[in-house]
Amino acid sequence: MPGAVIVGAGPGLGSAVARRFAREGMDVALVARKVKTLEAVAAGVATHGGNVATIPADTTNEKTFSWGLDKATGELGVPDVVVYNAALVRPDTLTEPSRRGHLEAWSVNVVGALLTASHLLPAMAERGTGSFLVTGGMPKPKPAYTSLSLGKAGVRTLVELLAEEYGPQGIHAASVTVAGPIAAGTAFDPDDIAEHYWRLHTQPPGRWEREVVFSG
Image (cartoon, rainbow, N blue to C red; front, side):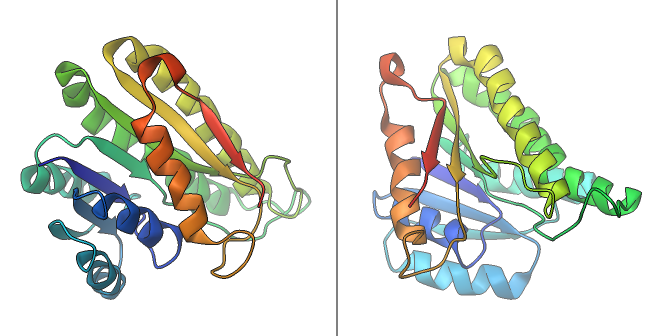
């Protein structure tokens, strides 16, 4: 049975993406920090078919996060698609930088994605198929969200590096850049955005897109 690993499986976009893959009959492993969040998301995903595994793990704790990714592959086998949707979103500025705050944000927004890729992509590449999809944002950097702007630029570069390294081995690395605040019933409805993750995953190799910019 094909499987999807969703890192950052929150109640908004993460949940919508998980439901979208579950509707195709895929088993889903949900990874997030909070058990209550996982339970709520899993309840919604389970109604769409497929098995759902919940894995509490923090992307900033390398040991427990690696354990969580191992548990996900233990539940699903080598995944067909991995979605990195974790992000630390908070306002901070150029004039009042906090070294600790920026390092925390970089750890979630970029390093967590790198750790996920380095942990899961080698086995996917050995099989010769799969997708690694990252939630991007901030198509235009904003000084009021300096750490997030830097992080989204970093993760966009990471996707380029992964595509260069793993693309020849059959792995489609791409990002979905969301250019606005995600909220149900708006132009940035998470269910609408989730369609692009499925579309990227199902693209044939000759037509792979590297980035989708969702502008509502």
